[in-house]
Image (cartoon, rainbow over all chains, first blue to last red; front, top):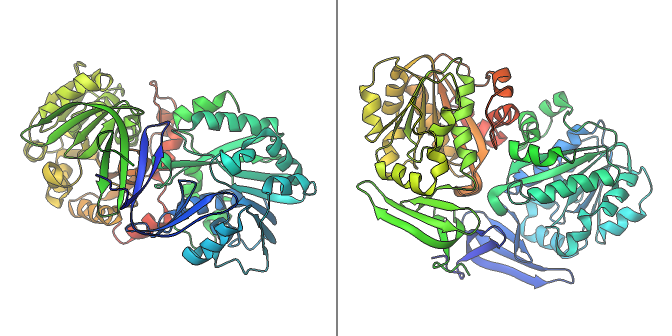
Length: 286
Length: 286
């Protein structure tokens, strides 16, 4: 039915589901020192980047993810000036971060430069802010970079990573979270992609607990739709250093001087709502 | 890659995407006078009902849809007593409606009795309220039933239908909406499944306009996740007869005496938030 010559499919073996996009052509593939990257031209979703068999982003729906990985945390922090993005090589999160005038520096640290080079070619709209003088692109190990960063030197850390297997495994550990907590200034916030609320409830529980053990005193998961990711439903989890995460600069969000396609103040508030099953699952950890 | 002997796939040709569930077996199939119904036993989602090739419900994730088709409208109406469900033959919406003590009668009108008989066998948990003395199950044409119903005889109409093609086509028309408006008492609410916010934005625009033309003075779309439906993101649209739809009985929702798995007061509020792209698309019609 779904001819593998015409469809790219990502199978989630543990949940017995798959999502597929019809492709016109595979326009690029390479094995980098870190991972296998493929780019497809699809019929309905524009370009699709796939890393190690998992969908990373599409032209059509990446706005959901990139806006939710950036604006909620930026409008929750009182005055974010110094931002760091771990991963995020497609530069879509960086672009959203730089829409905030108060941001003075945004450093993106992806271990694999090829992701960025391919984004420049196949997702040029996401890289349009790369020349911003506030932006710095590094291609090295984000875990080590955080470990070596000066204490209290950042206001916001965004972990825009692949799934917690392979290169990104170290990003879901208590030790990494403890390093992040140390590097954040008081009032600082970490936000990290945290998989599907439906498929990965246990991972979310473990992550909240690891964030608390890493020294954060508040945690908060945001839910949002993401059609190309497993279950079509995704999450990001914030952790705060002396800052409430269920409130945000509402008036600033309402008056934001830039356009978005998904995010607005009401969407932000709505994303804070916890489905009953998730609220119960997380109640033991928070 | 996805062996059709092992996977059920629903293809959305217009968007070039597909969602698949791995099956253990097809446990039932039949052609009724109205449609083709299949039941699968899946690896990760329990039972799956498919009608005319489209996923209808799974054991695992139907709670999202059924809770959002019922509780938001019931907690928006001031005091819903008389409820009618058009479609909804699996009885999952009926079960949620009957959780509200104030409901005095709930009539479910599905054109195809076989849907209900198969739900009794393969989704027995959804039919557990069918013997409630307030419930009435009819198997006839819901459009005609509404056309012939007495004016102002209902407080809430829930249209829990298949996609707007085939048997359900007549449920997305101005004439049907005008009939609903007539049958609703002042303060009454119609809520209807309204497809994917991402894939069917134009349908949502048309539906808001048709609801207004049908005589409703307020309309409001709710968004929620639904992994097995196209794009994994779904919506229901409410229309009100002299009633604001962006407010609800907050204290009653917070104190609800029954358990839910997705719905709560914050989820309700969050579902009212309109993604920026949808807000802009609907701005011309509301």
